[in-house]
Image (cartoon, rainbow, N blue to C red; front, side, top):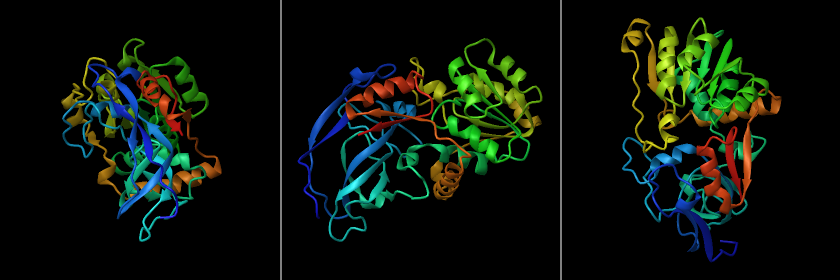
Length: 341
């Protein structure tokens, strides 16, 4: 070990399990003792971590069918982070100065299992790009619902961290028409003017199914669904024969003040699923471990060529992270939200 270890670290904890949507009052920033890294671990000074709405699902619930543990009062939050190794045992494969990606964000220093750290890949021009969620969209649109030349693709929740990249990916994979959904007219305009969406369907502005029919009068071939709810119902009705659906999120439940976020029941027309031969599958990155490296290579090449954008907002300071989470859930931001330390 070559660097003095700080005596304490600061971390964001869940102070009270919220009964509805979480706000800054449900969190606290606590100071905790920090010990030197033992065998198999390294000390990382976090530089950036991501804030994402799916975290809400973990608050005070018994999570099933997911590798992520639930969060109780007093627990520290966690999530993807980029940081610099500042201390490591002599036999560690990682050395001070190495930049790594890991899952112990929401704190300024993290003691992390070396095996759970991934070195920052120089293929990406900015380390922050490792905190984008484009691999979800890329994996879903290449593995479960592969985009074919000329396809009409619908991306629900198009202004979020996944959706803001997903439409661009669909176009680069050959889509002929790309349609998104969002709840904000201002975001809808940005999706079209900045990210190349051909049309955007606004939720909460009358019948979603009716507006989708106007945007895709000939139906859709591919769905990347990040929302569920009425948008998934409408997509089934709009599907062409042989349509491929990849479900990768349930924002309609996670952003609802009336639901816990760990259930997202949806009514769909099973008759249409059968007679139109619609494939409908849920996407999990854990089922496709090869996607991350493949995506990083393609994302880096597309970024350097100017073929894709990485929309994101940077929020300065650990103390502002709970406020950032509230604003993400409220739909304030466009693209990914990153806390910079």
